[in-house]
Each structure stands twice: as C-alpha cells, then as structure tokens.
Image (cartoon, rainbow, N blue to C red; front, top):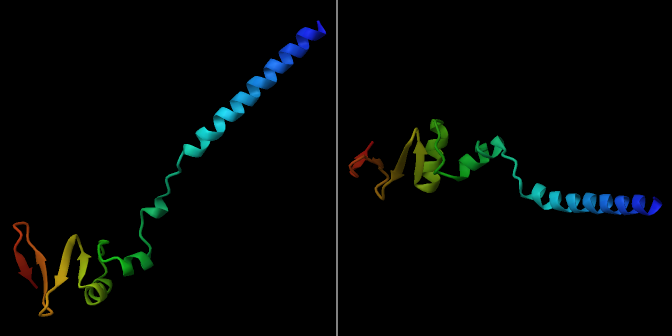
Length: 96
C-alpha cells in the first residue's frame, strides 16, 4: 500500500512540474495593450510633423523646423519661395 502511495505522489509531482513548465512560455507571449502609447506625448508631437495636431502654434513651429506639418487632417508644406500649400484631392497644390 505504501508503494502505491509513493507512485501516486511521484505521478502527481510530475504532472505539477509539467503544468508549470507549460504555463511559463504561454504567459510570456501575452501582450498588454497600453492606451498611453496610442496618445503621443508633447515631445513626440514637437519632433514628428506627421502627427495630426489642432494646435496652431505647434503647427507653425513644425512648418518652420521641418518644412511640413499635419494640421487638422491636412499636411501642409513650405515651398522654396516660403509659401505654404497643401495638396487637394485631385493632387493640385493649393496655396494659402
């Protein structure tokens, strides 16, 4: 009877060991979604003219610094003559 008990305990310990080894790689592959990464920081907006903004002052600074800036869904550019323009739906330059 004691031999049967020892065999059952060994099988039980082996099953626990196998389950713990199986769960470890599975937990590493799960990713947590953070909404903080979806909202750009002020520093990211300053250094990336492709991020949409509604801030007029930030838009003007990015036009000066990069020559382009996205403002209220439109990307504005600065021409070689220092004129500001954007492209219409048809692909034509519209000067402001």
